[in-house]
Image 1 (cartoon, rainbow, N blue to C red):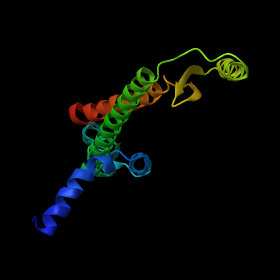
Image 2: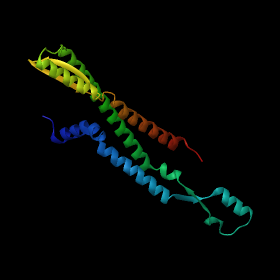
Image 3: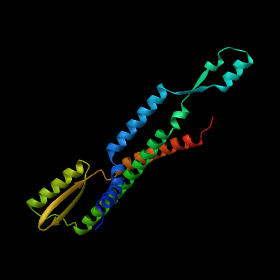
Image 4: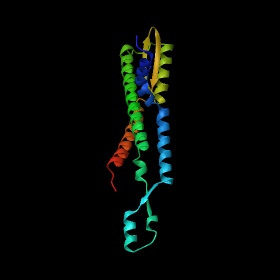
Length: 191
Protein backbone atom coordinates (compact mmCIF):
# COMPACT_ATOMS: atom_id res chain seq x y z
CA UNK A 1 0.00 0.00 0.00
CA UNK A 2 1.36 3.39 -0.99
CA UNK A 3 1.65 6.17 1.52
CA UNK A 4 -1.15 8.73 1.16
CA UNK A 5 1.08 11.77 0.43
CA UNK A 6 2.90 9.93 -2.38
CA UNK A 7 -0.40 8.82 -3.92
CA UNK A 8 -1.74 12.38 -3.86
CA UNK A 9 1.47 13.71 -5.36
CA UNK A 10 1.35 11.11 -8.13
CA UNK A 11 -2.31 11.94 -8.81
CA UNK A 12 -1.52 15.69 -8.91
CA UNK A 13 1.35 15.16 -11.34
CA UNK A 14 -0.78 12.85 -13.48
CA UNK A 15 -3.60 15.43 -13.71
CA UNK A 16 -1.23 18.37 -14.37
CA UNK A 17 -1.35 18.14 -18.20
CA UNK A 18 -5.17 18.27 -18.17
CA UNK A 19 -5.11 21.25 -15.84
CA UNK A 20 -2.56 23.03 -18.01
CA UNK A 21 -4.69 22.35 -21.11
CA UNK A 22 -7.79 23.97 -19.65
CA UNK A 23 -9.34 26.88 -21.50
CA UNK A 24 -9.84 28.74 -18.22
CA UNK A 25 -6.11 28.65 -17.43
CA UNK A 26 -5.23 29.74 -20.98
CA UNK A 27 -7.62 32.68 -20.76
CA UNK A 28 -6.24 33.70 -17.36
CA UNK A 29 -2.68 33.53 -18.69
CA UNK A 30 -3.57 35.67 -21.73
CA UNK A 31 -5.21 38.24 -19.43
CA UNK A 32 -2.14 38.21 -17.16
CA UNK A 33 0.21 38.77 -20.11
CA UNK A 34 -2.01 41.58 -21.38
CA UNK A 35 -2.08 43.21 -17.92
CA UNK A 36 1.69 42.81 -17.60
CA UNK A 37 2.14 44.48 -21.01
CA UNK A 38 -0.12 47.39 -19.98
CA UNK A 39 1.81 47.85 -16.74
CA UNK A 40 5.10 47.77 -18.62
CA UNK A 41 3.80 50.40 -21.05
CA UNK A 42 2.63 52.76 -18.28
CA UNK A 43 5.53 52.09 -15.88
CA UNK A 44 8.61 51.41 -18.00
CA UNK A 45 12.00 51.04 -16.41
CA UNK A 46 14.40 53.96 -16.62
CA UNK A 47 18.12 53.92 -16.87
CA UNK A 48 20.63 56.68 -17.30
CA UNK A 49 21.07 57.33 -20.98
CA UNK A 50 24.72 56.76 -21.87
CA UNK A 51 24.83 58.68 -25.14
CA UNK A 52 22.82 61.62 -23.79
CA UNK A 53 25.03 61.73 -20.70
CA UNK A 54 28.17 61.72 -22.84
CA UNK A 55 26.84 64.60 -24.95
CA UNK A 56 25.88 66.51 -21.81
CA UNK A 57 29.32 66.02 -20.29
CA UNK A 58 30.98 67.13 -23.54
CA UNK A 59 28.87 70.29 -23.56
CA UNK A 60 29.37 70.77 -19.78
CA UNK A 61 25.65 70.75 -19.02
CA UNK A 62 24.53 70.67 -15.39
CA UNK A 63 22.21 68.03 -13.89
CA UNK A 64 22.93 65.55 -16.66
CA UNK A 65 22.41 62.70 -14.20
CA UNK A 66 18.70 63.56 -14.42
CA UNK A 67 18.60 62.48 -18.05
CA UNK A 68 17.30 58.95 -18.40
CA UNK A 69 15.80 56.83 -21.14
CA UNK A 70 12.71 54.68 -20.99
CA UNK A 71 13.49 50.99 -21.09
CA UNK A 72 10.70 48.58 -21.99
CA UNK A 73 12.95 45.64 -22.81
CA UNK A 74 13.96 45.04 -19.19
CA UNK A 75 10.32 44.43 -18.25
CA UNK A 76 9.91 41.82 -20.97
CA UNK A 77 13.12 40.06 -19.97
CA UNK A 78 12.01 39.79 -16.34
CA UNK A 79 11.45 36.34 -14.79
CA UNK A 80 7.69 36.82 -14.19
CA UNK A 81 7.07 37.60 -17.87
CA UNK A 82 9.21 34.68 -19.04
CA UNK A 83 7.39 32.33 -16.63
CA UNK A 84 4.02 33.52 -17.98
CA UNK A 85 5.16 32.89 -21.57
CA UNK A 86 6.52 29.43 -20.73
CA UNK A 87 3.36 28.36 -18.86
CA UNK A 88 1.15 29.67 -21.69
CA UNK A 89 3.28 27.77 -24.22
CA UNK A 90 2.92 24.57 -22.19
CA UNK A 91 -0.81 25.15 -21.91
CA UNK A 92 -1.10 25.57 -25.68
CA UNK A 93 1.02 22.47 -26.35
CA UNK A 94 -1.06 20.28 -24.05
CA UNK A 95 -4.30 21.72 -25.39
CA UNK A 96 -3.15 21.03 -28.94
CA UNK A 97 -2.09 17.50 -28.02
CA UNK A 98 -5.43 16.64 -26.38
CA UNK A 99 -7.38 18.23 -29.25
CA UNK A 100 -5.50 16.27 -31.92
CA UNK A 101 -5.85 13.07 -29.90
CA UNK A 102 -9.60 13.49 -29.42
CA UNK A 103 -10.13 14.37 -33.09
CA UNK A 104 -8.16 11.30 -34.14
CA UNK A 105 -10.28 9.12 -31.83
CA UNK A 106 -13.47 10.69 -33.18
CA UNK A 107 -12.33 10.14 -36.77
CA UNK A 108 -11.36 6.55 -36.06
CA UNK A 109 -14.65 5.74 -34.30
CA UNK A 110 -16.66 7.35 -37.12
CA UNK A 111 -14.91 5.13 -39.65
CA UNK A 112 -15.43 2.08 -37.43
CA UNK A 113 -19.16 2.90 -37.13
CA UNK A 114 -19.44 3.36 -40.88
CA UNK A 115 -17.80 0.00 -41.48
CA UNK A 116 -19.98 -1.69 -38.86
CA UNK A 117 -23.23 -0.35 -40.28
CA UNK A 118 -23.23 -1.36 -43.90
CA UNK A 119 -25.25 1.10 -45.92
CA UNK A 120 -28.23 -0.46 -47.61
CA UNK A 121 -30.76 1.11 -49.90
CA UNK A 122 -33.93 2.09 -48.04
CA UNK A 123 -36.92 -0.22 -48.34
CA UNK A 124 -39.74 0.47 -50.74
CA UNK A 125 -43.01 1.98 -49.70
CA UNK A 126 -43.90 4.63 -47.18
CA UNK A 127 -40.86 4.01 -44.94
CA UNK A 128 -38.49 4.22 -47.91
CA UNK A 129 -40.09 7.46 -49.09
CA UNK A 130 -39.75 8.99 -45.60
CA UNK A 131 -36.11 7.95 -45.36
CA UNK A 132 -35.34 9.31 -48.84
CA UNK A 133 -37.13 12.61 -48.10
CA UNK A 134 -35.25 13.01 -44.81
CA UNK A 135 -31.92 12.28 -46.47
CA UNK A 136 -32.60 14.76 -49.29
CA UNK A 137 -33.62 17.49 -46.85
CA UNK A 138 -30.44 17.00 -44.80
CA UNK A 139 -28.34 17.11 -47.96
CA UNK A 140 -30.13 20.29 -49.04
CA UNK A 141 -29.16 21.88 -45.71
CA UNK A 142 -25.51 20.99 -46.29
CA UNK A 143 -25.21 17.79 -44.27
CA UNK A 144 -23.42 14.70 -45.42
CA UNK A 145 -25.73 11.76 -44.89
CA UNK A 146 -25.52 8.09 -44.21
CA UNK A 147 -28.46 5.68 -44.16
CA UNK A 148 -28.14 2.36 -42.36
CA UNK A 149 -30.22 -0.24 -40.64
CA UNK A 150 -29.33 -1.31 -37.13
CA UNK A 151 -31.31 -3.95 -35.23
CA UNK A 152 -34.28 -3.54 -37.54
CA UNK A 153 -34.40 0.25 -37.16
CA UNK A 154 -33.58 2.52 -40.09
CA UNK A 155 -31.39 5.51 -39.23
CA UNK A 156 -30.51 8.57 -41.27
CA UNK A 157 -27.41 10.22 -39.90
CA UNK A 158 -26.42 13.73 -40.94
CA UNK A 159 -23.13 15.34 -40.03
CA UNK A 160 -21.15 18.40 -40.95
CA UNK A 161 -18.21 20.38 -39.70
CA UNK A 162 -15.67 17.62 -40.20
CA UNK A 163 -13.06 20.17 -41.25
CA UNK A 164 -13.82 22.59 -38.40
CA UNK A 165 -11.00 21.16 -36.34
CA UNK A 166 -8.47 22.81 -38.67
CA UNK A 167 -9.37 26.29 -37.42
CA UNK A 168 -8.62 25.34 -33.84
CA UNK A 169 -5.37 23.62 -34.78
CA UNK A 170 -4.20 26.58 -36.86
CA UNK A 171 -5.06 28.98 -34.03
CA UNK A 172 -3.06 26.99 -31.48
CA UNK A 173 -0.08 26.53 -33.80
CA UNK A 174 -0.18 30.26 -34.68
CA UNK A 175 -0.18 31.21 -31.01
CA UNK A 176 2.77 28.89 -30.38
CA UNK A 177 4.69 30.53 -33.25
CA UNK A 178 3.99 34.00 -31.80
CA UNK A 179 5.16 32.87 -28.36
CA UNK A 180 8.28 31.31 -29.89
CA UNK A 181 8.97 34.68 -31.55
CA UNK A 182 8.52 36.47 -28.22
CA UNK A 183 10.90 34.06 -26.50
CA UNK A 184 13.44 34.37 -29.32
CA UNK A 185 13.22 38.16 -29.17
CA UNK A 186 13.59 38.12 -25.40
CA UNK A 187 16.58 35.80 -25.37
CA UNK A 188 18.42 37.01 -28.48
CA UNK A 189 17.76 40.76 -28.48
CA UNK A 190 20.48 43.26 -27.78
CA UNK A 191 20.76 47.01 -27.35
